[in-house]
Length: 135
Image (cartoon, rainbow, N blue to C red; front, side, top):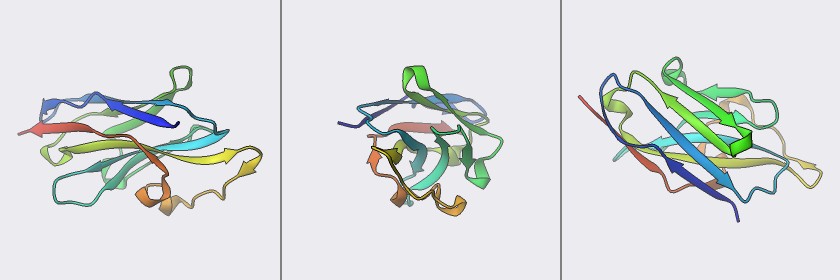
């Protein structure tokens, strides 16, 4: 069973930093893409960043480039989201999700760049972790 468990959310002052973790287990895929998403109250879920297990390439929402960094520790089966210079508008529930891209000799058609942060393209989701940034 695929499981994704997020942690690291907290209450932090504006300008502060947090590192979120996404611990993955139960993967039977040969390759996958893991993404971070967030959803603020009354707003749609939006893509934050993603990373490919195949080559480590990363993609970011344009508005967050330079402040957020996604990384992976394959030995620990964990993906991180380092968030710096946090702003009150970063307040949201943060989710990680996985899109299998290869399994049992099958390779899924790669996503075009414009679709890599679409929540509808991801198949398994964690429960989320709350990040609150106070002004």
